Length: 343
Image 1 (cartoon, helix red, strand yellow):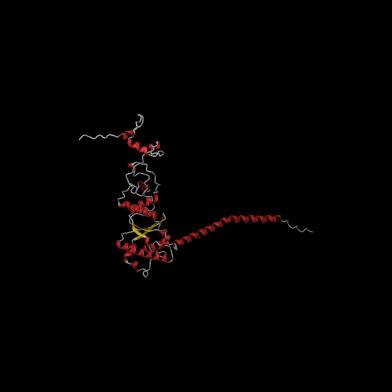
Image 2: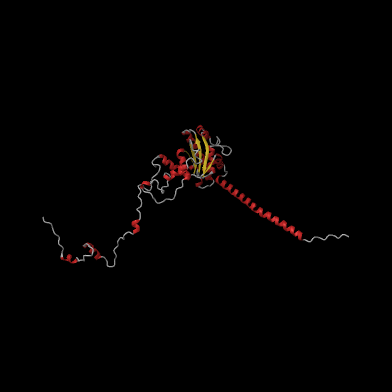
């Protein structure tokens, strides 16, 4: 079958306009679209890019998602997650007590934690009866746990010596993603290098050797600290152990045998280190935090009175000196009585 040849009608040929050779070619469909447009309407066109846009560098591409940046330590390992949890614990917990434990059995740990939780619940009930707000009742948040010292010690150095910089724009290529300065998380290269620069320099490094357990408090509360010492490390008269009549289960063999294997090492309170005596002093503050505030107010008032007396002593001595000199001059200016003439 021969091919069909499509011929245009005379009307279609009349619509075609003969353009000069110098003009650009426009297809018939586009010419009809431009003809049907409104006379005053402007056709939107995309402007050409400027020189600055063409010379601007193409941003670097990243092969990792924003929620999972590259790390110096593999985040899939349990040690990496343990390090992250320890750093978070050190950054958010103001009061940490360190104990050394020697071969405690599982039953002994369970018994000690049971007695500690029972004593702290009684403190919560007492504070609730006194009308204290709920944020001051922290008994249920006090935890006694065993730590891995080989991971807690580098976490302590990271928490103390690593200061993350504000996030920056990535400057390195894909090959240098781990060394990117914008990566400031705990497992980054920057955190690792900061911890390595202060290796064996932290004062708690000698303490974190062997078997160590920590007692964490979400707030610095001498009341709860005193109760915890009365259970875990009793020392009369400041921290007496509960009597057998008041708490008979405290004297069970599993509890007493476990307490004999616990030894107080020190504390970290608001970033400051305390030895055994300093830690017990914090727990021995009468009245808890209110008693500490009262002692501080009394100390400041006494300091202010002593300062006022010291400042007034100089002016007083000067006033007494000037007053004595004035009286001496007045006595010299007075006319002396004439002596009786001798006959």
